[in-house]
Length: 146
Image (cartoon, rainbow, N blue to C red; front, side):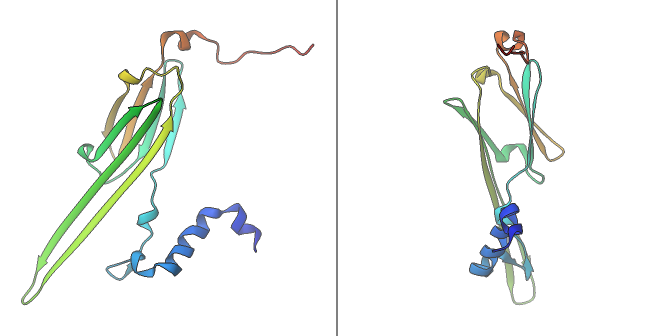
C-alpha cells in the first residue's frame, strides 16, 4: 500500500468505482465522475450570523430544497435535463440527472425560523442569524493557569 493513498483518499474512490462500474462513468463516450460531485462549502461566522456559501452551478433556485429539523440544516437539490435530437431515421434522447444532499448541525445560538437563502451566480448563500444573547458573548476568553 502506498502512503499517498492514505493521505488522499478522495483520489482513490473515483478510480476504484471507475474500474468496478465503468458504464456508470461513460456518457457520450466521455469519462466523467459527476456522479460523485458534492458541492464545496464555505462557512463563515460573523458576530450576528453564520454565512454558508455552497457552490452549485447550473441549478435554478427552484431546484433546491432547504429543511431545518432538530437543529440540523439540510440542503438538497435535484435537476433533470432532457434533450431530443431528431435525424433522418432515428431519434436520439439523452437524460441528465444530478442531485446532491448536504446536512449541517446547527448550534443552539441560531434562530432557525429566520434562516434565509439566495441563489446568485451559481452559489447558494444561506444566512443563519444568531440569537441576541449569543451575539453579546465574547468570542474568546483567556483562562488563567493556577
